[in-house]
Amino acid sequence: MRHSRRYLLISPCRDEARYLRRTLDSVAAQSLPPTLWIVVDDGSSDETPAILEEYTRRLPYLRVVRRDDRGGRQVGPGVIEAFYAGLATASLHDFDYLCKLDMDLDLPARYFELLMERMESDPRVGTTSGKPWFVHPNSGVLVPEVCGDEMSVGMTKFYRVACFEEIGGFVRQVMWDGIDCHRARMLGWIAESIDIDPLRFVHLRPQGASQKGVWTGRIRKGFGQYFMGTSPFYHFIVALYHLPAYPALIGSVAMLWGYFGSWLRGLPRYEDAEFRRFLRAYQHDCLRLGKRAATSRINAERASLWRDRHPRPDFASSIANAPLGQGGLA
Image 1: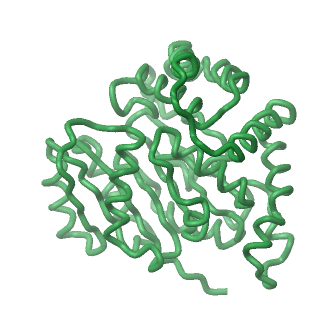
Image 2: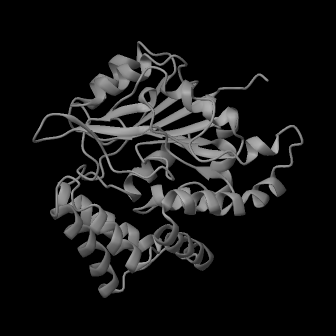
């Protein structure tokens, strides 16, 4: 079976001159280049505009959208606003796949080709990604970032367009990159990230350190879990699990402060009661069964919801129910 592989990259960025060339070069070296790559310059004041102008002369699929300076980097809602400013300049229905791609990454050469192979092997995979690694600031050694197999990672959100549309796109708030995967799973899609060598990429800036340092990033992560509707007990266990992760102890304390401080202040939450019930039931199953078993269970339970909306007699049931992380990636 021949598959269409038209994919759209959208990259919000601001003051990324330090890392920009490595990302641009790694996309330029892809075995299957994007059909269109929209980079949204969100008011950069460094050399980012000049570098982008240089690369638009070299890459025929690269388009730059410039936005006025909003006064500073806005992680979460600001990033998603910039993403949608880019998406507004294209017709999503012209593409089969959509990726929100950060501009501080170094991708392996077959990255997008392998992601599309995976999605072609299983029609229920709605969003997928590889795994991020970063250079540890103390040892200088490449180490993996902590991220579960049941989530596509926020810096390379690769989506089947049909799935992106069904979940309603991204929520314009912190934890948009968690809500999307849980909503996809709630609707019967599979969300995942895959840990194999050809899909491991380098995150040039450690996760959660993109605005005002790691402490602020971890507090933001705690607020995001609160906003999404995560169970307080589940979040406490997750914080304990992250104790050894960089920065050891401090990161977990900040995560707890971000969550429970938001709770005490009565900050608003994501307004979808059905979603929050689904999320907490899934999280409690993760604590009881383990995350992999709980994810496999919910994927199996929700398969009929997906099949009801996507009746395709040519999809074998063995493919439609493929286990998490398996597919055409030999």
